[in-house]
Image (cartoon, rainbow, N blue to C red; front, top):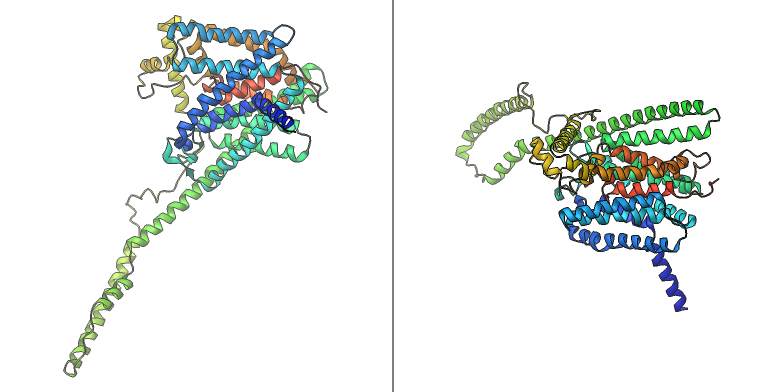
Length: 530
């Protein structure tokens, strides 16, 4: 009996430890939640989680992949071979040039894990195990989206921030405009964008309607979060990903010749983009109006309280003075004088009352030339425009990078190492307060780190899996098995990379989801779900 229980426990632990979906969620949570400002109290524990759990666990998955690869018959896929060559390029030349630095070691471990612990291991799994991992990941990301989305939407409704004193960005409504999850609002949007499509996969894979609706609710909550962060990059990436999904569905459902199918699909995609853009704009405007109403109401309450404190009750003051003054006993000789005195005081009190009322009325009338206090100024918010100075700032960074490459073409060819280019670009653009800047473009960042040689290997990897990914994305009859949402995730992440550095950055939340989705798309196809 005990031996049977021990075997089951060992099997359960081994199944969990080798579950790529579980590991993807663990890495996603670290980069998207655990390193945020509200958890800064536990930064030592978070760092221990990364150093002693996440990295060893990921490297163990890489070793597991090697063991299973040894047991499998047949040659290794071309995509995995290209990833191996790319990893060797990332490790060997830069270890020789810069040594065993902290940035280098983190980079080597991160890329090894996403290349082999996530992509290669999941792609080479049996169809049954890969399907189970896919289902588990969809359910886990759905649970995360429900909790994370509910917390942020509560902050939206109540217009408040938690743990704002723990870092630059609090959890919730921030800066009169942005919705943050304890990290920069663009990063919050990228976390929500990745979780959106992982949750959406369950809509097609779950068999029961209630489960489908729960996954759909989680995906909708994440879509709302993406819009409310006011991150233009994530919003446009989400809209284009939905348009790509609409194109795939339309081309699979329309029965006509190829040119007509393509034209009809493009029209459906354009219509989807317009509807999504309009809906996002309406939602953004409605949220801003809600923010203004709540903030202006709070400002009005604060003004009323301030006015009440500045105008104490005259009656209460007079009453207190009267109680503190002893009342003398009148004598018969002083009766007449007292009556005269009381009459005189009553007359004076009446005149004083009239003067006081006139003074209060004058104080209550606002001076048209007076400057209103900050509390009295109504809050006025506007949604972010399609372009503003933040894009100009990115252009400045890119110009600084191109200037660096012009002065040192060798760095563009073979790379400058992880985290070593930002300071040089800063010097070229005289932006000294941002010595740790990134390139805000994942493709330029990859070239800056690993050169055109590394970027060419990365492009070769994408070319090796392009055909199976497109077949999966556009295959008729496979709309309900969750792969369509993975294709949409890839589209959204690659588009996001045009303005952000995170999508191809080691163990970032978007890179983990990207290689998980690519493994699902490039893996051998299972029979279509009906």
